[in-house]
Length: 233
Image (cartoon, rainbow, N blue to C red; front, side, top):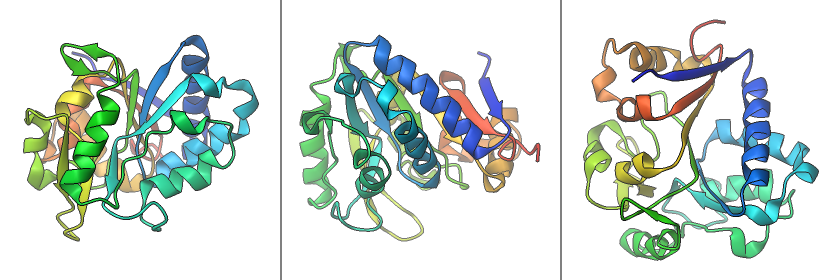
């Protein structure tokens, strides 16, 4: 299978292009189920979406998260808080369309709580199906909260699981590989020269590529990247 790569001159241009793509996807749908990631790269995407907010039919969007740190929604490390500050305070997304992972719960309770949310998604292959999942990639090759030491979450027979950050020991709620693979569409949104080494190993299947969880979704996703991430600047 060929890997689809879309490269743009800068991180900002990548975010603007992806925002325009999302606008069309949302507007063309009757009910668009989107899962987003945390981190600095999505923040730029949310800023770009806020700029074009008047052109988007927000009532058609159902917003979910790929993963969440096990902290409260007001914690500075919360993926929800970042999305709230960067996007939700700026756009008229109905409150009922926001499906937050509850990181303040005991991790296993947070998983059970979010399972009830994603069970409302359309079922395909007897699994919940997102219309689009936007994944990030860490400079260690992790995606969602599937880190190199916990690659079993790629193949585990569960929709959601508790992941662990191997560097801090922090617990996280995360969708698993089978939900990522069952999405109608998956996009890796990766920017910055700090990702270049790992990204090139993944795309070219060289070096330590098999150690990177992101590699295992390589050909099932489109890669929207800036030139820095592919070593072109």
